[in-house]
Image 1 (cartoon, rainbow, N blue to C red):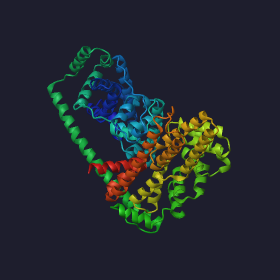
Image 2 (image 1 turned 60 degrees about the horizontal axis):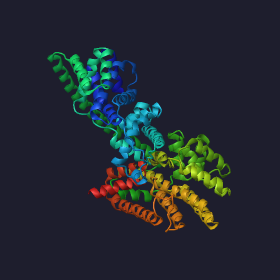
Image 3 (image 1 turned 60 degrees about the vertical axis):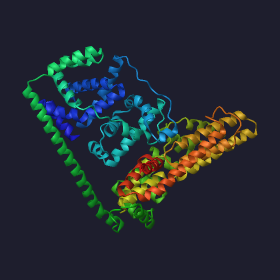
Image 4 (image 1 turned 90 degrees about the vertical axis):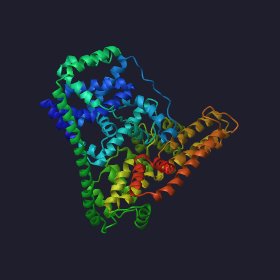
Length: 602
């Protein structure tokens, strides 16, 4: 991004065509991918890309921040693409039917086909900071380290910023009828958002854009109007632009040579960056080693090569770290909210959670932890209301509220809160937000990286006390259904059964197999109270068929867990690292499915 600023300056101040061509080469994939998504037409995407770089050539002088360039290009591309689509009188067909929860847990081409037509309009509903985070990570394919450097924050902070932006994007998509499950949107963006532009497009765009700029605003305007004309008219104007761009053969040969030189230089820069990355990792490793000894009082094995070594290390060392190691970590991190939550998760000392609650009472992750652990029982309702206000799209505040009303013997209010919970588009326990801090806490205590990742992933996927609360809530729903049935109030019984099934379905869409199993348990108990020979409007099939489906899904989870236990001991260090990174970022269920697919390919 620093290079972008230097290239912008060269073009802005010296009209360097080489600098402009280099910037086009860097961002042609971003522009073309966005154009293709919006227009769904490769030929029209080329035209839009041309218009965008003409606009860039004309307005480059107004862009003073290199880090802002990807976002600027993205927004101009969306605008140009929508204008082109309207001018051609072509309407994108949108698939508005929500994906099934099974589809969300295993994203495939159909899920991307549903997301893609709505993606760019949804991104434009985000604020600029969130837009830039999504663009840098998924469209410009920047690493978290590079994003952190651009924002002058740590790699961890950059990762969290991207995660929050993706969460907000999920909320916008949900409002448009696409309920994307945990992790699915990030995976879909990673695999499908960026497309390589056609070969030679960058060189063509550079030449035409520079030619159009040399011809003044009129030439650029003429080209922009071409996208609204017939193909014959567009071809004619394209010919005029090409004619404007014709220069002497000697100059053309010079540009070709310059492009070759730029390509060679770009390869050298890439090699230098890779070497620098490797050196940085080595320096970081050397730097961490003394600090581990200082904090833990003993040097541990620096590297691990097998799952067996990780198991032996974790077994030999208590996951509940001593207080002096935790305090050293908190001092290093200035007692951040994430650090305090991680310290509570590792030590189970409520003092850390109280400190987090005092320092950040409006933080959703803190509010969730306070309620899940019943930290302030006398202030439960206040914390519930605060959690609702900070996380209006998350179902969990309303589930906590319903359980609190049941405990207070207010079943009508509880039923109302349950109905509200099942209408929410997100079900999040904020585990992934704390997992990275847990990993860093173990590493600061001298744990090897793989052992730290294993414990962090385990902490993120652990059921925790909140699942016991949800089980209790499911029992309250079942009891209400039974009472209404006994009283002959079939309408109220059906309403409670509807709510219970919706609650179970929501939990089955979670990223943790434990949440999914709890959801299945609630649904099976609800179905057991129904007449297997009767048809119910609120069910998607017969009682017996749904029971059979739940049994099959439960068996599927057991199979994938068995596969995990079989395959994980065979993984090398790099594969284990990849497994636990996936579990930390996308949830335990996705990581296990990744292992299962890995086994099937062998």
